[in-house]
Amino acid sequence: MLRSDAQQQTNGININMLNIDMMSLIQKEIEPYDMISLVFLLYENPDTALQRLAIYQRVSMDIDGNDTDLLRDWVSHSQSRLTWKNEFLEALATCQLYSIIRKLGLDVSAVKQFYQNAGNNTLIHPMKKALYKLCENMNADNVYKLKKALLTYNVDTTDYEACELVFLYLMCQRFITVKQVNNQNSKGKNDCGIENLAKIIDNFPELQSFANELRRIERNICNNETNLNDGMVTSTPSVSVRDEPKVDNNDKKYAKDLSDVFQWFNGLNMEDIPEKELKSDTMHLSKDSYPIKDSNNIGICLIINQEKFHPSKESIEGNVHARPLENRLGSTRDKETLKSTMEGLNFEVITYDNLDHKAMFEKIKDVINYRVRDNHSMFMLCILSHGTKGHVYAADSVKVKVEDIESLLDSDDLTKLRHKPKLLILQACQVKDDTPYTAIVADSPRPVYRHYIKKSDFIIYWATAPDYEAYRHEKMGSIFIQMLCETLKQFSKTDHVNDLFTKVNYFVKRICVSLKTDQLPKVEHTLMKKLYLQIPENNNK
Image (cartoon, rainbow, N blue to C red; front, side, top):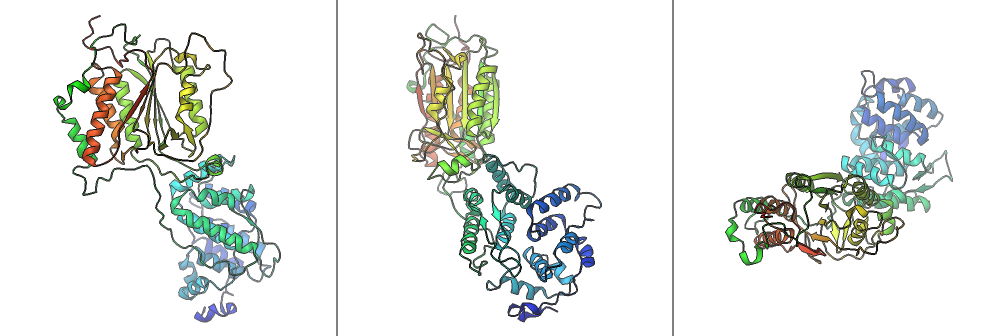
């Protein structure tokens, strides 16, 4: 029987009953996810562990999925070591498989006390134990972001579901290195290389302390320190991070929450709008208006919805002051509202979600080259994302300059948009930021047409003015996009774009005053004529 004084004398642990035949019985009692963890901790060769677990993961859902020899095979290769039974017990304790420990006739409290004692040397590599604890604290969204980040390093882990298998693959690819820790059978072989992974984990606010723990263990190993488990993280820390502001509908200081404001807007009397400010200049398409070539097919509306963000090699290595970007809850509501609104105005709507900075430019070019038609009257691009002054973020956390997007729409490679009005709608903050941006421009230029002046026929509508933030309700969507869509639905058949956007400015300001938040949309344009999204109902032509 394991005694409480085992913390002073490891040879007091009575586990002699363990043998290779008993392993066959034990592994039938272990759930598949626990088996994956045990193999991760026990197998020294990551290639062997990954190969065996990849097969195991595929068959573990079968009726006889638990009838495997993973533990028995490990014993057959490890029983030449005098410590193999202690290694197995340590793995059981690390994975908190206390029911198995009890069935072995051991005292669970004594085992826990022994392995929680920071002064004890461990037989399982402390880096592996730290990686296991990291796996235990990663949720599905964390694993998704990790896999997306690894793709930017040309490391594809999409075939592996369990976090432990992802880490084993990283070891096999030498993205991280975890060599055998010093013990009586392997002296002088200490080596770890964990920084690549730690830099990625730094971008998950709730997991940053685990990244620091990995670095601490690596430093201790490099310094040949024996007390490697001192300060081991055992629970998920809570780290706050500044992000795009969200409207707190539970805050008592607000007279109305955002959902109330949306209802207030729907019942708003249009006579409340200052006529002098919002009166449309014309009710018909005259020569001073851009033509609408086909009222049943106005043009393309491309929506890029950046809702989920992940770190990438470029954002990690290029952005010295980069901070983790939270997912933009509520952005899908904005996308769907925009989509239904623009389809109702006879636009062909194309949507993309969560594009990295390269894919973002490629998709824009593809849509213009292959979807824009001669009979289209205009082109609209809507980007919903985090942002800083003059920039928006791609899904890979890389900052993209809006001026580069504007240049792309006006490049010599995309002549289909020439002389067509181009609307760029940006739901993003415009606060100051000193981090660098990615400079992606059009491919090699073609000869410039002398009669065409660059940057003409543009209108760019920001959700907020420079140095201000754009607010978003996590269920109802953003103030700007929701007010924009309501205004377009009600007034597109009577007002031109400048008047429509002026109305939106008025509504957003009125709402933000009510909510005591600072946001005011901003319009920049080089339009030469009035731009209508539909032929006005009172067209007298």
